[in-house]
Image: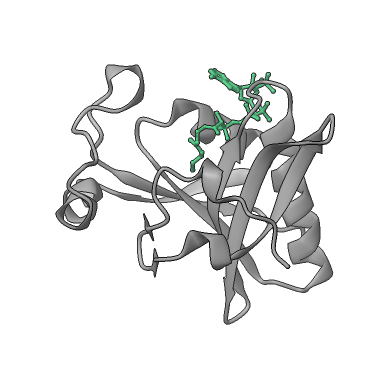
Amino acid sequence: MKKDISFVFSSEYIISTHKEYREAHLLDGFIAYEDGETAGVLLFSEDGGECELVYLHSLREGKGIAKRLIKRLIEYTQDNRISRLYVVTTNDNITALKLYQQVGFRIKTVYPDAMDRVRQKKPMIPKVGNHGIPLRDLIELDFVMKK
Ligand SMILES: CC(C)(COP(=O)(O)OP(=O)(O)OC[C@H]1O[C@@H](n2cnc3c(N)ncnc32)[C@H](O)[C@@H]1OP(=O)(O)O)[C@@H](O)C(=O)NCCC(=O)NCCS
């Protein structure tokens, strides 16, 4: 039986650059535990040899939980001969942009104003995001695979 992780979601409907995930809790993933409690969740989707890191949430910020989960996913992609690992985040998510680049991702494509399209489907998404930054763009980062 899958562990119930629905309490971590503000919405189960996740819109990416080229894909949409309607029932996020059905995706594969990893859970980090600390002191017997759920401390973080990472979900991913594999398709045609490519893997998208779809969802990452830390319940105990600044303690290395997210880094641990991403490193676990990197190991998984290496063990399973996945040719591409990528993640999509928003232009206001400075912490995520820092974190992904620290662990070996590089910005690949910026989709200016992509949040307008996302907002058509999820009108509740605010116009202003973290740190008072206008929430406008999607940014795709690829993990740089070792040759
Ligand atoms: C982004 C997120 C997953 C980071 O999780 P985390 O467990 O705190 O990350 P880590 O502890 O592994 O830290 C990674 C880096 O980010 C820094 N960091 C973490 N939280 C931070 C915050 N609120 N503000 C500034 N820096 C922060 C850490 O200090 C660390 O940097 P360092 O190694 O230079 O010290 C977490 O903040 C979160 O769940 N955010 C909401 C959901 C989200 O934005 N997910 C990503 C969507 S693509």
